Length: 314
Image (cartoon, rainbow, N blue to C red; front, side, top):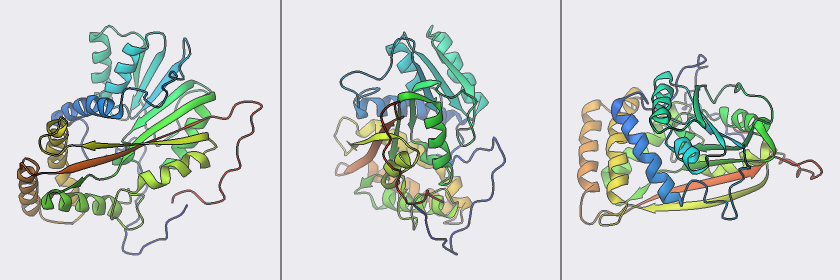
């Protein structure tokens, strides 16, 4: 799939290796705490660590798991604890985040999980067929559209035959808050302007519609989808945890919106304050849509289906 070039959309400049394209500084203390809380929230809301496999996770004794852009390591640490007979590796671009995750593993006495500094938009320093399972969650906050096919090609290379890659991505929440909706619209437009959106027009994040096709284009088979919708309306069990996630996240994303020239800092701050008030109103209603997509590396003797003729994202 290719997106027509829009002259109004600035094309992303080549990024130096190791340079972060994240819209939020992951090493910010508030962001670190938010990501740890978000990991727990997502695991619970999605139905567990590996809910797509009710018959049992694809993790043999001594199996290996790779967690892409692992952040502070919440999911990787939980998998290492739940599956003590497998080895888990988390990779992230930030040395400080990797150091934090490593300290967490040591403090919990987990010797089957390790963390390394790597950029998932570059070739990964592992041998072919190194992993039984590769996981990634909410990579859309930093991934460039052209990097998705390269990453999934790497995932296929790194999987053992029959190994699984599973990715969970999101679209912007749907809410009854005018100010929150405006901030989400500005966020989608900012990502589009920065060349970091899969949307054709910047009206949404755009990754979930194309993700299944991207897996098939990478040569993965048995591609499946599992949608999840988190309700976080006022008075519901998940209202506070999701509200807190966006309370911190929206404030940290304001500089990115300002840099894209969408509004002044003063206007954005006022809009943010209005959104915070509206999210706490008794009649606030909200849904957060997520999609988990997974597929397997072809196994010997089992022919892979023909790849779609369409082109990858550009």
